[in-house]
Length: 98
Image (tube, rainbow, N blue to C red; front, side):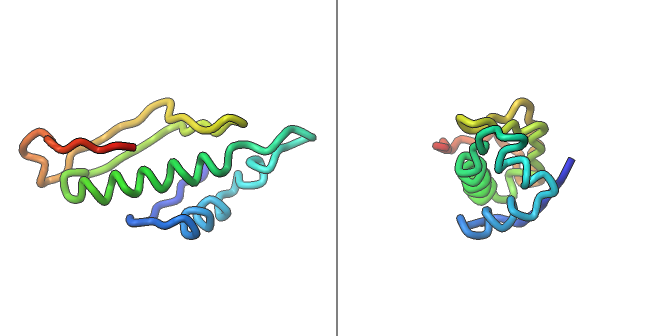
């Protein structure tokens, strides 16, 4: 398992560098003749999570996605844990579109 942490906001080039630094990065290119996986979808997910974290600011204490499964068709968060931040004393009323 590889864990990478960066503070948002994250732009496209930075998201690609983040992904390129993963130990499992070669697997995204395909193994043993299989087609490459959805690297663009993974970049898109990183960008959307960055936007979410930026929008929520101190209302978000932590966000843990494990696992994030990348396939040929895209990627999906199988399980996620969201912890409220110190400023989240009231329920969030804003709508975020991802």
